Length: 379
Image (cartoon, rainbow, N blue to C red; front, side):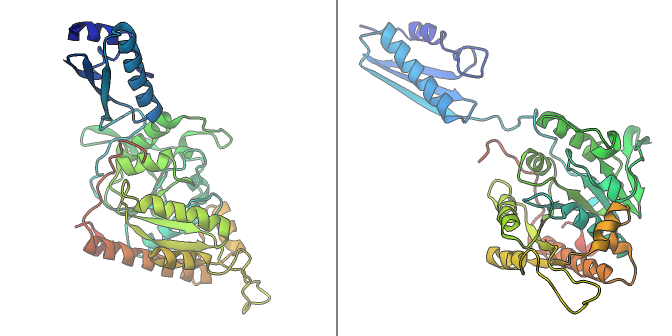
């Protein structure tokens, strides 16, 4: 029996690959069909990396050819996956923001470790040092910056820049701030899927007039999820700072956060780890330190992972109160807390300088599958 290639293609038109509206011939998944006597070879290219979909397509091809052409003795399916380079539904555009020298992502594997508090205090300390600073509150579902900078009731306005309408960030204590919290009521829950969250971030990043900044700090949500990938796909992150408490549960998640940034797919330098709530010292016993959540856990983790340890922040009631009242604790002049954050911030600046001197500028991540002083400006 002589096999007809066209007849085989007609048969394959009855098969639809899961998740696609067209049959595999119309969609272009079938790249070629070859016949060699009683043997059939089908070249198949899929756009989804899901193994079960790939296996199902191969089985369907073999089954229907065997049923329609009983004389066929051998059926071979050469399948491969070619995922489109860009899937814009869940991504935001990848490009630099003119005028911004360094973009530092502040992350934590676990929620409740004080990441936003650390971000706010890093921002005001950098500003006090003379740097131009902005903060992007990327925690779409739990924005904190409007409260921490006492600007809950503020609303960004539009301004025309170079003939284009741009969003003007809110300014507080010399820091330029944008947050989804400016666009929702304090009691309103943000119930969005990934594409909507990515679109909101896209607008706050690229449709805003950030102006000239030495540092843009990005306050990421906890974990290692969709928002993190969207940010790193959209922007060339200079480096990441990971915040953790000393307890084992938080350290386990912080380790995952560091691993995410250092993975081959992401490849964002980790500037270091900050230990928050490191110890408690009561006012009546100023010489005593009580390690409520464990001792030097984040410091030891930094050593184990080979990343810098940027410093420790004690568990102090005034830090919490300052955040609640909208005046970051690092603004308290001549205080021990101010000194703590100055040391940590100097370390962040130094690690940024080291990173920019020894490594090329980071590129925006391209993920197709889920596998002020001039010294700190990018080279």
